[in-house]
Length: 289
Image (cartoon, rainbow, N blue to C red; front, side, top):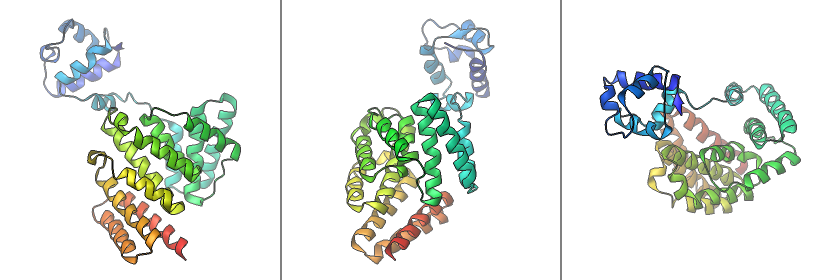
């Protein structure tokens, strides 16, 4: 049941649009104005099955309501890791990661292992050093191998730990995501974009390590629906296709086009994307020396 503060948040959205309770409950069976009114003041409750109908009547998407009510909990560890990553604070990243790994030793919960691996993955991105021991890498492999339903949760875990994984395993999981993309689409556009982003992260990793696997993955990515790509992911896909071609054929023109795409990202104020693309260009340059 939905009650207490949630009803008050619903009333805020309703009143901001000057929508009456009568209109909000229109055409909803077995749901009276008085019942919704009590819910809005925190005194009553309504069935979950009626919430989407109420939101439809006040022109609010469920995802918008989730953001408005802050129903999605934040993970403080992830916030702290991201802040440390931005500030290039390696000591803090390592300390947070080790503490989380100690927690996993006590709980043996995959969730704690995933959080620890996320920290070690950030450390790797800065230093190119994988400090997650072989034993825990193997546990991470086993946990991800058992994923057969790619919700946003598992897609994010894959995306946030793939630098710690073997190239063949990354390719295998990427294939699993592309093969199940029609199911992922049913979870909504946000999850679809998450999946596309994770696949491009995998493509970036494989392009730098295993061009043969990268080419196979690019072929699969190119078969995904156009709707799965926003502006940033479209630019990344184009960029990576030229980088991969440069890695494979050593055609300088491909490198120049990729460089132009990174400059375009800066030009259209996609600074984070531009930074990421230029980092890949730098790694490609260093590997060719």
